[in-house]
Amino acid sequence: MNIYNILKWYIQNPRLKLLGILLLHITQRRYLSIAMDPSLACNLRCRMCYFSNPDSTRWLHGVFSEEDIQQIAKAVFHRGLRLQIGCGAEPTTYKGLSMLVKTAHDYGIPHISITTNGNLLTPERLQELTNNGLHEVVISTHGMDRETYEHMMQNAKFDLFTQLIENIGTVKESHPALKLRINFTMCAENMESLKNFYNVFNNVKPDILQLRPVQDIGSNSYENYSMKELKNQYDEIINPLVEYCQKNDITCLYPEKDNIDIVEDENKRKKHINTTIEMLPNFHLSPHSEWKKEFNPYEETFEQYSKRTHRVRFIWKHLLNPYREDKQENMTKAFNYTIK
Image (cartoon, rainbow, N blue to C red; front, top):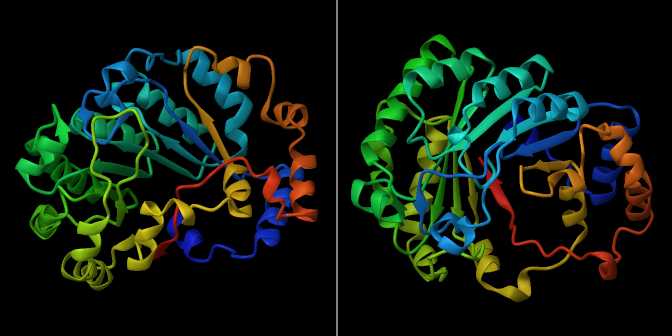
């Protein structure tokens, strides 16, 4: 399943989106995008991440047991269209990662992906994950040259990053369906390093590249959230990179120049119906201390959880009156990505 082709044809009408979700839900079809952090730990201390804050790491702990994974799978995986492993923590710190991928594959989830900094992903482990059913490796990076990479991603080694790219190229020779995605978080300090993208990926080209402006997620050591440098260098750096992707059959997710302002301008961060729609298919699980109070797979299935939380009633309410601003409590920092 090519999830990016689906995104390109994504329905724009809010009511049609909600109706589609409702139909998939009541007919018990797959529609969930399951996001999971099996371990709340990370081997790096990236400046733009909350793991760079010692106060945050004091409460960022917890790990799913193999029994937890099997219960979660039994309760939810039959409704999963996609499983994203690694949503803020580092999935390769989890010893049972291969087991988790195989379990998801055995339950028939069509798209299984891990988001990782990649510094712990050895060739042997990468091969095992792919053999077990992994469809995509998403590498999160904040630099395209050694100095920038190791400055922005403390404890990381640039050589491990570049070697992983080569290792993925080798694995793709026997598993050509495996996708490589690069998530690059753009900020004033690392924009210039993007010029080295062409050298890093000279031999092995990514299948997908996402260019995303830095956002303030709070509780980290980073302070410069100005979009000035991104806009100043947009025509010199971003536009040529987008054109390169088009010429080399790389799917590129990037913000239009005008949309960068949305990150910086609080007044443009509007509450809207898309917030509700984007929330509904997403099902996040992480082993924080009280995770079973939100959803306990030992006691209920996803269907029972949906009944308890009145999911169908919630969808109908927004279908009939989708513009109730007073009921929209979630403020999105998202902005529209162009997909080419």
